[in-house]
Length: 482
Image 1 (cartoon, rainbow, N blue to C red):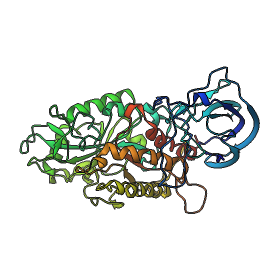
Image 2 (tube, rainbow, N blue to C red):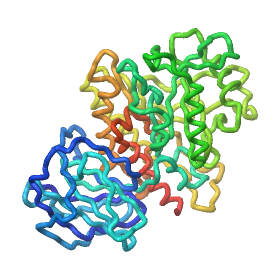
Image 3 (cartoon, helix red, strand yellow):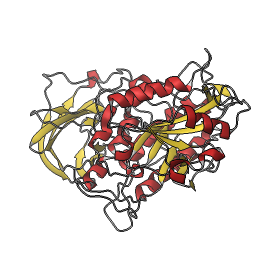
Image 4 (cartoon, rainbow, N blue to C red):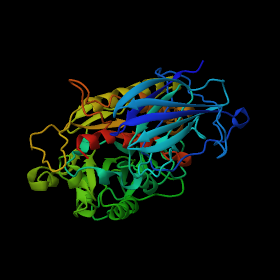
């Protein structure tokens, strides 16, 4: 017997499930591949289990219903789902067993939107507007159970434009990437990304984790920084340089001035350069214009728009301690604990458990990631309504950094791509079904997820994890009165 459908509304808008139709199409229950959706994400429909150790192997997806397909049953229903709540509808997802498609029609502000489940692929599926509605919804259906979660989001290339200038950056849910430029041909334990940094930016990523090595360890006038991952270059076809990466970021921000990028910089590699040397190169050759935020404080979104915010994981030269009116240089993130499930250091609170030595330890990593989501969600920032100004002493909360990355050079099953293939879908499930969005009781926070630093997003066009993280900002927009 199929499980009843549960709907979770994570948008700021009330939704009503109005019509349920059933189609018996066993001949269409055939593999269609793992196609990926590139539509913009405004809601997410996810069928998940409550057990984090569930086997998530799914049956093959359905092919889309033909336009002239005839249902064998139709039922008018009236299941109302308030914003940021969930409803057990009692509706069975199937009556005749495998080979059945359930078509759901929702109503929002008098307009109707439709989705078929199971969806034609395992990834996000855009709901079809039936009556010319101006809203957009996208669904993901994971067929282990019946759970429908609906998120709000914006165009991924400029999703920050809908947020208030006074919003503190720690209040945002921000997709990020770990070792962001490592998409080139490289050792499998070195490569962490599927696509280029520019493609990441175009698809909503707003935090880059960058590791560099000065080309000339003693010559500050030589501003060449080589991109590395640990002791390895990021490409087997020759060195890649930080300057080109910065140029790409500047070009993106020029085209999308509503956006910002937080950039974490760390010195790695085998050279003899010091952190102090690196800090002088940065100050003299890279951050010496208005497009960089180099103050040691976390800015508001308005202060950061169009800029690169420097999150500093290196020590600074004494000459920089008087920068920014004596406050210092860069947001200090020098020394958080290595391989930590949680550590608060200065303005950041970090989950960076990275040594997954055996595949069985991936479960530990997933657990630490999900626990950190809940820490972020229980934190409170002073989020202004439109027209309001936040008081200087209002709570801002730390900047939560949640690294989904981990690896073991010596275990094939623990290389970044392999871990991401298991971890990323589980994170999507947690955010869809179990993350506490807050705001409904004493002691609960804003419900965000902080900065989520991912491996291998965008592989084969799959941006669902990024879409899910961006979708969590709907609560923030509702709190701002937008």
